[in-house]
Amino acid sequence: MFALVVAYQHFYWWPIHPLGFLTMYSSSMRILWFSFFLGWLCNHLTLRYGGIVLLKRVRLLFIGLILGDFLMGGVFALIGLWTGQSYLVLPN
Image (tube, rainbow, N blue to C red; front, top):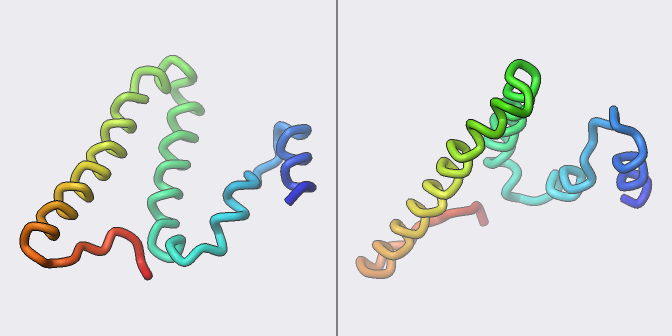
């Protein structure tokens, strides 16, 4: 892990982020990997073809998508408390 952190800090071309290495062994990555991939792909394409100007313009859109997902998880959790049903946010 220390070697990954050093490589990530010293080589701008280093593709492996140290946090990605840690999360790859969690059980929730079995269902979340595609969401992380889509986020990375949108970020990469935005920076490549629109630059930092486009990234600043669409940042609020992506923050809104993330907050909307959290909001709906919270709403379904509250509905689950009221109705006695459970809502599974992450896998066991």
